[in-house]
Amino acid sequence: MTSRGFVLYPAAQEWADQVNEEMSHGHCEGMAVMAARLFRGDIDPQDLDPAAESTFDLVLEDPDVESAIDTWWATQLLAPVQQAYLAFQKYRPSEIAAELAAGLQRGDGYTMGIYSPPVAHAITPFAVTREGNRIAISVYDNNFPGTVQRIMIDPVAEQWRYAVGSTNPDEPTGGWEGGIGTIELTPMSSRALPSIAPFDDAPAKGVARGNSATTHLLLTSPDPQAQTSVVLTIDGRTYDTSNPTVALPDGVLVRTTLGEVLSGRGTAVAVDGSKVKSFSASPRATGGATGSTRFTISADAVGAPRSTVHAVASSGEPTGQFVVNPGVNLTIDSGDWTDAEVNIANGLNSVDFPLDDDLDMSVITDDDGVADVEFLDEDGDVVGEYAIDDETEDGMVMDSTAEFDAETGEFDVIEEEAEPEDVDEDVLAWLADMSADDGSEDSVETSDGSMDMDESDDGDSAGGEDSDDAWSGDDEDADADSGSDADAEADADSGE
Image (tube, rainbow, N blue to C red; front, side, top):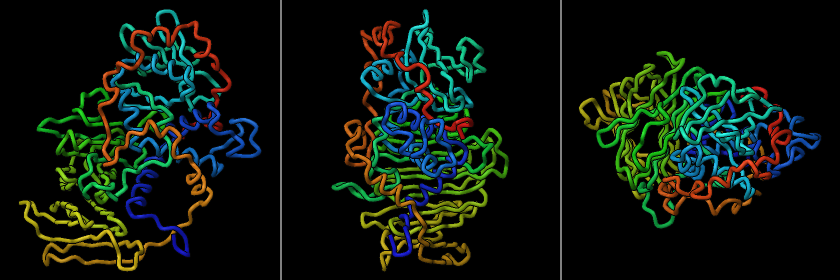
């Protein structure tokens, strides 16, 4: 903070800019979380608008409402939340229902993600009942306020179906159906704030800089018509993440960001470096993408600088790649990218590098906090070097542009002090007042910034031998609030 306002650390600013780029396409995840918070009584409508008598009196145009939705939307990109929904991606649909029913009886809250390519959506489940030989999960869908929607599960076939927008679950689904890996839960306890951010470039105590276990990738596009996915290459095998049912190696998490109306646009990837030593990731834009569609792909790891690429890629086919090697050393292969710019955010320094399509970059971080950037020609030879310290002489945040001249091997550098921005101090006060121990027992962020991806990955805890009792039709608690109180997001008529 300066006398003129607030200045975010460069990595935080780059992360916030990318989150806002993705969130501009829709807010369904944030609405689903807010619906759960209001339904559970974690927050009252009057906390957002003193004049509101019910959630239907809240409007998205209210800055307090919008800020709350935005904040909770962004939690889907935090490691504890990613770990939570990862565990459920390996559960059978009937196990999801059993775990949900047991959790609701305990008083736990959840959001639910459903995926039916090419769409994805976030909703709020609040009851589980028997419907003949099927299981019904009652949900609040923020795109259809004032109604109760239901997901129907066939426990024999282990398939789920969702007649979107219909109060009759037997109506045609319009393609909304799936099985294992296409339906998930996220416990509200995993969203406890404050939380360690993926862009935190300060290594944990006792951990060598640049030696964090987990690398987080985020792929987004400002094009509202484009859908993104990442093609991963690990140990010589290729994994197309546009298919939510693709079997990924142990230690790899991939999830479509949930934000657009009945659709997911961005892609979040987390790779546990203790299980996957090296990998490459190529961004791809499909759907309504064109040859001029821009994309943003970033790499975060605790103890390493944030690396972000803004570029244009040819639509449809994966192009270019991030190559991550042990020690969080990163190589950026420009491939067929055009109009590319790479930002390296290291401590107090933010440097933008225009990147020609015939040059690649590597970023290596030493134990002193210096990020060594190398420009490489087509033969892999180093043709230019630039060092970025994590500190500045006067302790101020610096924004720089360093344009490489291939003929001279020199950089033309423009450097200026970052401009402070206005920040809502009420939001800062709210975040400061958040209880650090709300759900903290369930946090999975370890001291070295890694993610424990082994727990609950076999689905055995979903209900076990007693799972039938968890969703018995005689369970009054599971179906206690099947209607009006589920209208937990106010002016959610569009989900955007």
